[in-house]
Structures are given as structure tokens and as C-alpha cells.
Image (cartoon, rainbow, N blue to C red; front, side):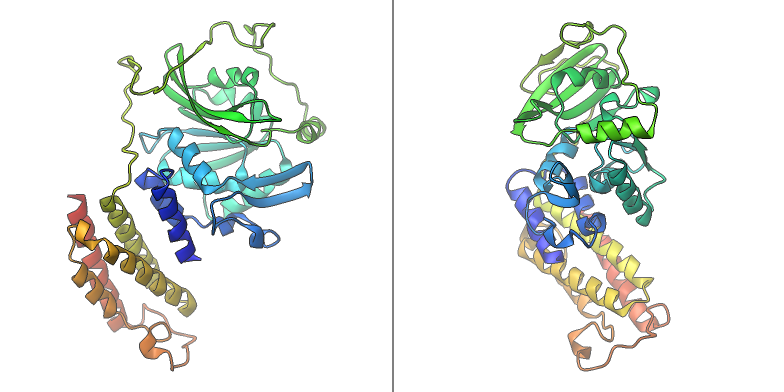
Length: 387
């Protein structure tokens, strides 16, 4: 599974979808299988670039986690520039997208609005298991309303099809100081255009990205459910134009590049991240990930988990070897220090020995010392790459 994930990520990079180093690392950290129940796990798309089913009540009421390439487009389209930006996600997607987003904005708060109470419950359970609920909260309400009592939102992500007339109440909730909304806008029964909208003061600038086909953000089934569960009354915008449903003061100006061709006002300073992944980015991500795996392994008491971590580190090191000539690192030192790690039951040298049930790394000073030395080598090479 780990090798399949790596192959998928390199495919996303090669095809131009995965461009942000932070998101590359987030995909490594998060496992999509943690967000899909056993009932659907064998239908999951974590080996290939396709949507993954996680909820199915009937042919008119089901949910999928978006394909990895679409998740890349969604999260990178929000142009996260600071770790403390707040994010509003409309449509839960089982919590996978919000978990990835949390890695991009670890100091920000994320609110997920979901109309389907079953999907909201599944999402909350998934995030609880991973201890994410301190920074990510779930609301069961009409996502078309957004969350106006907490505006302005720096970022808003719409994960289901929405018609243009329904987008304007959400635009009003965007932060005037460079807030960004990303949504599939268009006919909910046909195709939509994933559209990036930037707010600067009272001006709205849009960029049409690509044609997509999403299921509706909220179905009639879920609207009926909300009416039963709570006193539901769709919000009416006071200055709404009755003819087209658009507030009179909102006009979206479409341009080919909302950041390159717009003269941003002084109060809307934005520093978009470098959205191109180079070999040095892959090296940094892999080495930092190896460092984290090693740290977790030192505290583990499960031989099977330790064995899996050792195997995954070996896979990453072998990949790094393929482009070591493009990196300013001492690869031989990395490989040598890794080969000095000898853990009973996990290395080929011990394949004929039985696994030890009460084995822990903390009580084995020799192994712990070799792990610490390996970790020091890894951290030294990370610092070298970053400098």
C-alpha cells in the first residue's frame, strides 16, 4: 500500500496536479483508508487516481471522497499563504480533505458544513480517531448558507456542484483582505466549471479553472432531513436582486490569472506559495518524513508496526537513491546508518528468528542508539538541503 501511495503521488506530480510541497507531505501523512469504513475499503481508490466511495444509502444518496488529482486542484486553488488561515469547507467528504487541509494550515481553524447527518457523524468519528477535532469542527446545516456569523472567512472550499445564483451569499462571507473561494459552479445536472474567486475590498475577481462533473452540494433528500431535524429557514439576503438572485453590489470580474494580472490593494498583501515541486522538494519531504517515522518507531511497542516502518523507510531511501545526483546530500552515509539498524523480527538477518512479543525499543539501548544516530544523519541532510 505504501509503495502504491508513492507511485500515485509521483504520478500526480508528473501530470502537473500536485505542485505544493506541503500538500505532498500531507498526502504522505494521511491514509485515505482511515476515512473509509471496512464496508467500502475494497472499493477505495487509494491505489489509483479516482473517487472513493465511503457512504451509500441508495442510488440517490451516496458520497465519495474526490479523486486525488481533484483534491490537489481544490486545496492548491485556495492559495494558502499562512499557517493560521481559517477555512470553511462545504461538504464533509468523510473528513479526508479537512485532514489534509489541517496539515497546510496547522494553526488555523477549519469548519466543515454538511447537510447529511449520517455523513456528518461518520466524518466526526473519523476526525475523533485521529485527534483532529480540536482544530476541525462539523456543523449539520444547509451548506448553501455558509456560516455568516463567523465571517469573514479567509478561505472557502465548496466540494459539490453549486449554481451561480447560490454562490453570492458565500462571496459576501469572504474576507475583503484577499479572501479566496473555490467552487464547481454551473448546472448541477450537467458539468460545472471549477472557479477560483478572489475578494479584494468590494471587488471580486474570478478565474475559471477547468470543467468538472460533481454531484450537488445538497440534495432534496438532505433538505427534507434538515427540515425534520431543526427549524430550517433558508436565509434571505436583504439586498438581493429578485430577478437573478444576485446581490446588487457583487459583480465578478473574470480574468485569466487572478494573481498575475490584478493590481492588489495595499491591504491585500498575498504571498502565494511556490507551486512547483522540484527534486529538492521531494528530498526534503522524504527525509523529514523518515525523521518522523523514526521518532514514532522509537516509542512503538508493536513489532509488526516497527517492521512496517523499517520497510517504508527502505522504500523511501531507495527512491532517493534514484535522484541522489540532483541533491546535495551524503547518500552513502544515509544508507550506511540505515543498514546499521538491526531489529529482531524486522530485518532479513533475523528472518529465521521468532518474533519477540514483549520486545520494546526503549529497553534495547543498542537499537535505540542506532536509531538516534540514523536520525541525526537524516536531520543533518535535511538542514543541508534547506540551506
